[in-house]
Image (cartoon, rainbow, N blue to C red; front, side):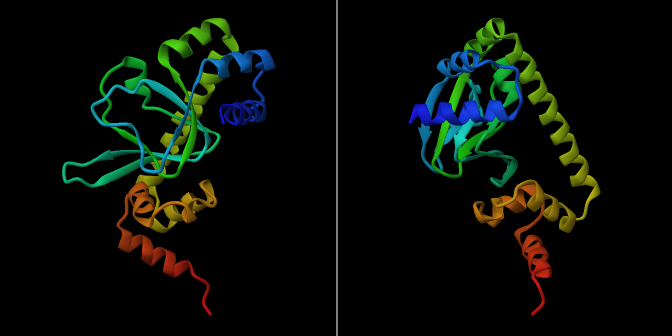
Length: 198
């Protein structure tokens, strides 16, 4: 199983056009903890310190926060061949305000902060790639925030469908509504309006 995860990781890094050599990729992979998690399994709970940077070789995770009324607010969906973590908790070793759980059975590669920092010292190109990833994620987050405050619910839904093709079949509607910041009723109305007229 771990071998399949490492193959997926190597394929991903090659697709990103990183300057990492096969040997460097092998070293990075060797430093990871391979973990298989079941659907609904919690990887990070609010109040805990986020100890790992996570690469999803297969499966699907979400990052969310629970409101005072118990409602869930989805901040991020992380599909296969992507990364997730709570950056602030991970970097500063402070309690997280977020939860991360599996929406499907998932296969993960996980690196502790000390382990990943040691790799930075060994492989400077990994630090460069990591900084590019952080910059890209920040850009994506800002764009998402802008769209949330400037777009109609229908425009946000269309953007979600384009950004995450195929995801609508994998995610409960209430989670999509939570991610978009609209009610399930509003989302149902948008979806009905987009159905082709017979």
